[in-house]
Figure (cartoon, rainbow, N blue to C red):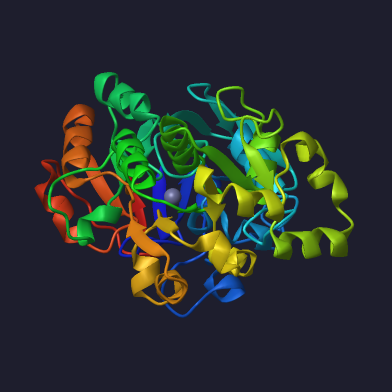
Length: 413
Ligand SMILES: [Zn+2]
């Protein structure tokens, strides 16, 4: 088996890895870059037959999870090329496509499941569900031509699926020749402490207790783990959680019984102005129909603002123009703080203007150095290959032989 990292050996985002064995190839992820100057078509890796389907030896794209930097360029691949993704990740992206370009309707799609090996040509692939900030995320064990590679995808140990990380530590795959391991956090400063999703419930609940007015939950619509965190924190304080119609639509489409049900009234649903206009334009009224019983309208939000925690993104700012609605309120920003620093979000300014308190309460979607260390110690791989990192040199302290493979070079496993 041979490996070529098309992007990601010294970069966070745009993951794409090609594996080759017995004359056949597959891609692991085909993501949109998050940095640099090349995006879209310009960023497509050079893989024979990727866009025109003329390479019969290219057998498919295996997508680890529904984050843009892992699947974002798949839309440019040949529609005939088979795509492999988790069933619920696929549902999430299909549902999202009704609202945002961050969604996707894959053609020629196949679903894999946790610990159910499947075969693509000479490649036997075993998915391992992973704890990560994207819903339905996986790592993969790939066996071909007598060699074994483990691709971590993105993972962590401190979310609601912490059991998945523990399972990897306690029962790792045996005889791994190469471990292709993400190192997102290695370039970021850390004080060594980790905020878990469970810790966040308490921290968020404390802030809600401390707020007289409305609480705005600033979270990414597709981060279902964080939604669950806000939902639990809200219940602790006796308030009601209000999801915008986009989040409600995602939850309803996934339809997993362990997630809060936006059709039951347990969670209220509001339709922000911008989404209302979008729905009228596209005549997609059926998207909000299931939430008729749970709907909350602006008048009730105004009257009951002190009893609500409402999901919020910058695109909904004009729904909260009324000072009587936001007086005494607080925005709990719960996304990567880098978005604030690099200027892609001006929510801090918006809060200052409105007199709304602003707090950042967040937990990373990625493993700490200590977690990566524990993982490498459990796996005892013959080599570790850095990916999805800006600090590949820090892998040297992980306690295993490190193979640095620069982008676009083929290397035997
Ligand atoms: Zn990710």
